[in-house]
Length: 112
Image (tube, rainbow, N blue to C red; front, side, top):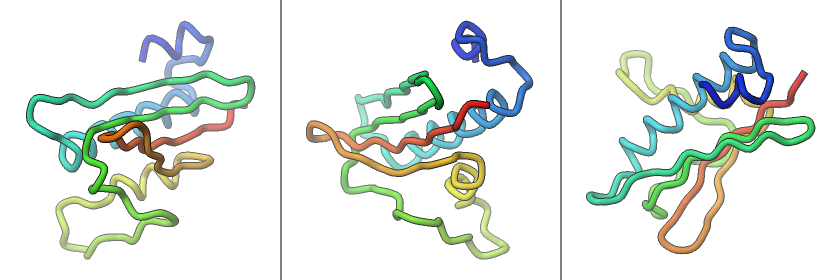
C-alpha cells in the first residue's frame, strides 16, 4: 500500500501488514455482501495523529455485519472468518451509516 509508505509507515512493519489484511478483508466483504450492480465500493484511509483509520463504504445498508465480537463459523465452513481477522488485528472496528444508501465498515490501528 503505497500511501502508507508516503505517510512514513514502513512496508513490512506490523502496522502496514495489519492494514493490508484489514483492507483486503473489508474490500472482499464489500464485494461479496455489499455489491449492488453498477455501483462500486469506496476505500478511505485517514492518518490521524495517533491512529490509522481504514473505511470501506458500499451501498447495501441492509447488509450490516454484527456489532461486537464476530462469531466464528463452523469448523468446516469455507468462509466467514474475515471479520474475525479484522477484530483481531484492529484496535477498534465498527460500522456506520451515511447518506442513504450507504454503509461503512471501519477499523482503526493505533500507531506505535
